[in-house]
Image (cartoon, rainbow, N blue to C red):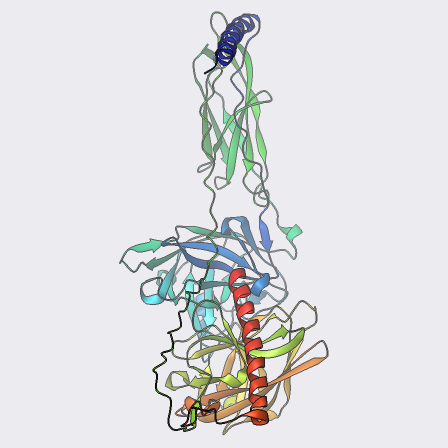
Length: 628
């Protein structure tokens, strides 16, 4: 170190010592001159509003597998436009309207909902665009990530003014009970990974509810992994967000003893009503915040130290975590006297509690494609000596798993595609001509009693894609999530059926009654207007085994796309319905190409086009993966 630098450092040290001495002197003079109250503590976190969901599609429990555990988020919206939120920050509102306010039907199968005629409020399994459409999803878990490729959902607790029942409609309209707040036989259920499900959510009284779920699974090493408790808040009632009232609260402060000695800690105890109010209590000395504590079971306690000699006005006020849930309130101030000798400064308060742990969103899944090394071509490889054309099927057979007949925009124009989600990971968008749906023995069903003449009446045998997912059967829906945001609906038409029997596409309402969409038995075309951003499922029924080709059209913004969707029903071999390609794929015996000149030009042009299209596909796939 140089001499000048050493002097400079020495000077700074001397100056610092002087400042320290002056500081001590000022502190001593100040303490002798005026009383000093306890140091200011940290105020409570500010209240915030929940995100209210009341007329949108949502997966209340969207399960991810991350870092060897399970994480649950709430997905809001559809497709690429969907956003995610912490379930704790969400409030689901079920409107009190003619669409949701129903009476328990006088049907034995639905006695679990209550006595016939009793009122109930229902968020339906089938989307009603004027109501919230809640479901759950395991699409965030890749196949193979957990043992058995399935997770269990548990309903651990329900708090609210009435009962809660969650059920769906089975293949023949029968109720499939999932969760119940009163029947212990229906508190848990298993769902496979890559599943997206909806159900009917029934509440028997208006008011606020909190449903506590837990999701568990088995790690490949045998450990049980859990999401921990996940609370989903509901408000049943009103017709808009403005109709959600915050619950009034009251706060009281238990008076501490009237006096304390200088330096003696003073304990402050506050009570908040109702006991379930969620938030913090701030403790104050006049207008000065001493600190805050979370409310637990309606109570919060704080110890103040270092109160200055003299009189104090001690108070408490409740700060709700969510202003959507509770109102703030305050307790009247209580007088307190600190006695003793010379006033002294003991500027400390009880340690400020650590803030409530925040949930950390699961990291976005990243897919990387391993590099592919092509084998080197040996110069000694023998050349073919003969050329025999080969014909083989192309495309895919879908016999289980989730897929949609979808319309999407490509180059600004609507096209029909099969959104194939059966393989896990990002879905594959396939031309309908490359897909055959297979309905085997697992798809058979017997038509129940009721208004089912369009299927042949009671007792008839049909092969059916059910509205709810079933093992061994394709789960086929319809999808306009990537049809743009034009605002206008997509008109979906069934224009023709080529097959040995009739075809019907229909939905069940909440009580198992069919709502027919397409029915080839009474003539075609049939049409359905589907709003953009829709993803829905229904029943697809075929009355006889055999091969079927269904002609569809999608019209959006004056442009129509047509397609043919193929089904192999019953014992029909689906591979025989796949498109077939023929290839020669060999050279002449003397090593020369079998075609030259003008005869080869069309193939070269087609090859260049295929290379260009392949480049575009790779770019789009890369962009899709980056987006995902």
